[in-house]
Structures are given as structure tokens and as C-alpha cells.
Length: 401
Image (cartoon, rainbow, N blue to C red):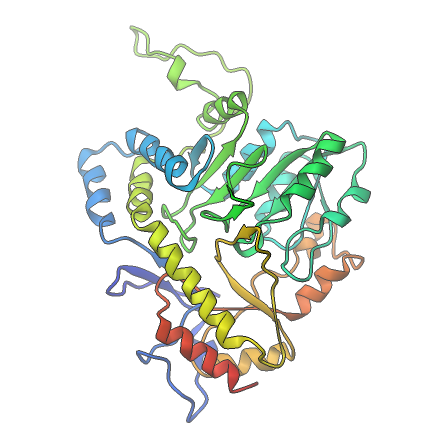
């Protein structure tokens, strides 16, 4: 679906859908600037070239002082607790499951409204993903559908913050506490989000972030894992680099580190050149989130009362990171054709992943997931989206489908 990237003047790499999807209807209005409006862009701060170039010049490319600086800023600026910078969000999910002790024969309850990485990492550790239904109003796991799925084999609940909108964490944590379960947040969409005043990344046992190319904050590809328990956090840092505790394994006179592996580790650490990009992109992150939320409000105001659209819910006790702007729409295929025909990218972003044979096949008892699959749609939301472009998107939707 995503085509080749190219650089624009603001140093934003724009990822566009298949150009065939943007064949405009003859006589249709033209987007501001004359180019199709993409669903996503990749933001790269103008200072990134200098920062990354300095790393390349130094020739110290692997994990070093810039990774530590990046982690410190994630903590100071985004409220993440003990963030360990990793090479992907998928690595973060896998390492969280490993450190949490999830393994063969265990079960993990999660939402099917997510990307396959969430459940795939459960399978990778030998456990079974058990899907609970979602809330139709926001795409997040429904706490009311969790408890009856708990068995003696259940080890963890994975809460996926769909589109950056935080799950009902109080209810989820209460269930987990009652049954002695671990809570892992899949916060791939959620840097900068808060729940009841607490930053996502500071609430539960483990929180996993993604810094993949089209996320709010990118390192090219990368992620972070936050573990609230300091002892578990130390284990995360150790096991992200083969299981060797580098801080406490000095190099001996022969030039070899003194260490003794006690469990399986992985090569999941972030590199300094990736961290340099992340550090550059942290500059101005708060201001970019203000702009993103302004575009969201512009959409909400402009599309309020439009027939055939039902907006996702947004409770006042939490602040979404707004990675996506989605809603439910009637006559979805006609909507897609009409809006794409006017130069605006629109797309479903992930059908329920329970349809995959690996995960057990489609579960028809997940009533809200099936409803969500039938009506969800997403429109452009990214750092390069101007107020003028957002107004155009609103206008073409109001023209009908």
C-alpha cells in the first residue's frame, strides 16, 4: 500500500498510498498545492542531518552516549519510566513478554484491533494469544470482556492503545491485580498520551513504544520498553544486549568482558546513529503535538453533525496521542472511492488480526470487532498536514459520497 518516500521542503518523508488510489474524478476539486494528501508522513527535524552526520564522522555507530541521552530525554520530556531504547517496537513487545516470564503454555489476553506484531510476539514466546472484544466506540479492548476469558494459564493482559487513545487502565489494572496478572501496554501509537494525568509509559508493569518511520517520533526504526519495577528495568537493559550487564562487566586485561550468562538475551539495543535522529526529532515534539491536536479539533468541528459519520469517543480523563484520526462511516466503500477521487488518502488501518490462521482464525463472537471491521475508516493526520489541507479534507467529505 505504501509507495516510495521522497523529500519535501520541510524535510518530511511522505509515504503515499498506491497512486492508482488517487486518480481524481474529472472536474473534481484539487487539494491545496495540487498534490494528493497522504494518510501519513515521516517527520525528520532539520537538525537531524547535522546530528547524524556527526555520529557518522565519529565512526562510533553502535549503542553509546547518544542512546543514554535519548533515554534520559524520553524520561524527562515524555514521562517514561526507565525507558530502554531498542531497535523496534516489536522487540519491545517480545522483550517485555520474556522479562515478564510469559512462555510456553501461557495465555495472554489482548485486543484483535492491532497490528500482527502484538500477537505475533506472544506466539514467539510459545504462549497463546486470547482475543477479547473491543469497545466499538474507540477500538480499545473492552475490560468487561476480559475477566471471563481468564483461565489458570493466563499470565498477562496486553492493552493496545489504538490510534494513540489510552485504554481504560484503571479497570484493566483492577482485573490484573485481582487475578495476579502482568499488564503490558502496547503503546506503539502513544508517545505523549496521558491517562488521568499520568504519562503513558509510567502506569503499568511494562509499556512498549515504537519509533518506526511513520510514528510521531521516529529513529528510522526503533522502540522503547519501560518497566516500572527497577529490578525488572535492570533486567531489560541487560537482556537487550545478549544478557550481558555491560555496566557491571568490566573488560579484563586480555580485552574480554567478565560475565556469566544466566538467561537468554537478545541484540535489541538501539544504535547511536538512530538515537541521533531520535534526539533531533524530540526537539519541538511538544509543539508538534499541539499542532496535531489543533488539526484533530479542526476535523471534529468541521465534521460535527455530518450524516453517515460517527466519531470515536474521547473521554475527558485522558489525552490521546492522536496518531490516527478515524471514525465510523456508512457506505464505506462509496466513501473511500469518493474521497480518494478528490485527492485525499483514506484507509482502513488494520482489520481485526484474529482472522489469521496462526492466531486461531476469525472469532465471530467478537461482536464489536466485527462491527468495527465493517465501518472504521481513517483520514490524513500527520505533522505535515496544514490547516488549509485539513479544511479541504473536511470540505470533500461534506460534499458527500
